Amino acid sequence: MKRFECGTLVPGCDWRTRADEEAEVVRRAVEHLKVTHGEEIIRPSMVDHIKERIRDDQSQTALNLR
Image (cartoon, rainbow, N blue to C red; front, side, top):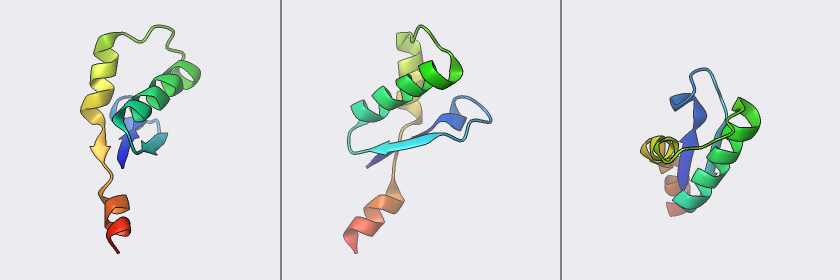
């Protein structure tokens, strides 16, 4: 499971998402940036910044191991 917290990119934003695949996390994050933060153009560098901030969701992994 992968997770992204928008506040790591946009200070003060508490939106977050989780998904099995990195591509789905990126898709959701891009949509959030467009809808919530008014970004009209998402440049490749912004996608790179999102990917840099995606983390493995260790809490979900630990739950699945029990």
